[in-house]
Length: 131
Image 1 (cartoon, rainbow, N blue to C red):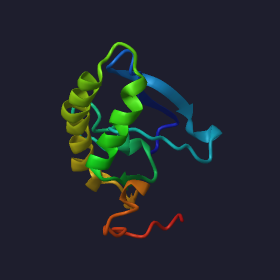
Image 2: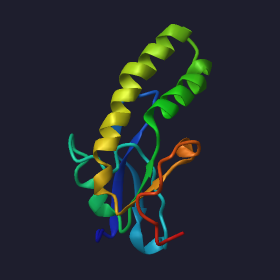
Image 3: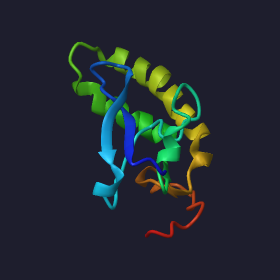
Image 4: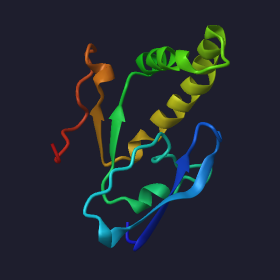
């Protein structure tokens, strides 16, 4: 990216929708800024220019089933939801989000496997020059 001031959206689960320009930083004040987010590589719905703000991008590939299972477990602590409601939301909403994220993975400079692949036969797609 080349902008002196970089503005990126944020997400607050309590609000439920992305918040435009929630995070701002001055490029000259930082040597390295690490951003993580499900939609940073997304190329639709107003997210398509976010990736242009970054000099380097890494997609962390993970097994969707493993991630959804972990999310179901983690979400058990959310008050006001039954175990069945959490299961349903994770299977429908969160799984759909994960599939959207995977479709935009090809926009990353490099892809590495997450620990969610630790017990699988999937190999690294490309070696990351930073590690």
